[in-house]
Amino acid sequence: MKKEQSKRGAIIMISQFLEEKQVNMVVAVLAVIFVIISIVLGIAGGFMFAVGEVTGALVSWGVVALFGFIGLILQAIVLYQWSAVINQNLSNTQQMFLYLKERIEDPLRGEIGFFANRMEEFTIPTWPYWVYLAMYIISLFTGWYALLFNLLGFIFLAFYMHNIFKSTSKLSDLKNKVYHYLKEEKGVPLSDEVYRIPSRNIITFIILSVITLSIYWLYQLVKLSSEINNYIKSDEKMRKEIEEAFRAAAQA
Image (cartoon, rainbow, N blue to C red):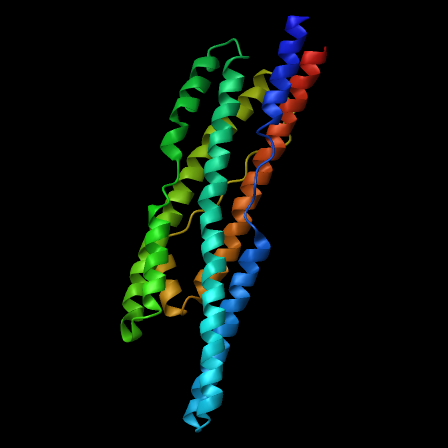
């Protein structure tokens, strides 16, 4: 009886970390829309001012300020979600590995435990995100110096993204190694591998973002958000398949 309760408890425990939050794609797309509209209105305001329509120009620039601020808030939300989602996945991966360690009786047991103990090394630090956000806000009030603060901000943003690529790459390697073992040695019917987020050249990212006046960055905002979600969804799928295999074994 106690053994049966223990099995059911184990299945409940693994279910607790199967579902994870994802990056909100609607917010990411809205951020891009608001920024693009603010750019278009800013250009239109410049033309109106040039032809003497001062009132229209001021109204246009007022809307630019409002839309730009909304775009900033939406971008900040998405950027924060990047690290929050991945760090949650990292924590759940650690719990999954500890769960597997207690239920696998062979040489890989120790290696899985070693992987679990290393999870904290892959935590994505958020301080580059906060520095980028501060640089962006300062640039709104510094006139001609805005370009300098934007450039500094993109450097810290690039560092933030580098940590995301580094963390998810190592996590994908560890997970695929363990999942491959479960499939080949333990007969767990896993259908795929964990999605690997493509890395970017950080220098190229900074250069393209600057010379395109942030258009390339807006593209990456949506693109990387989608890739992070693909990473999370693929890992959720694998963990659910592992749960189903353990549930079937417990009921056998």
